[in-house]
Image (cartoon, rainbow, N blue to C red; front, side, top):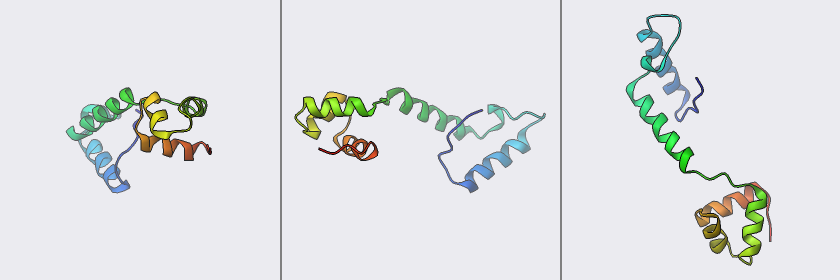
Length: 95
């Protein structure tokens, strides 16, 4: 099972302890995890499905098309203006 853990180490430990206690065999399944674990997975899945994967080239193209206006470029990409600033920093994009 692969899952990005949203909490801290103590929460992870408590969840695994709960799973160990409720497990009847040698394999822990989703049924052995607390009920709020599945809610977290569903919320993460929705975020991934609605999220956009945008690479450096797409950002630069949108910025050039928008005359380096970040608000316009963000609208072209369908993302929030703050996100474009974060992506520019992440990809070392400067005007």
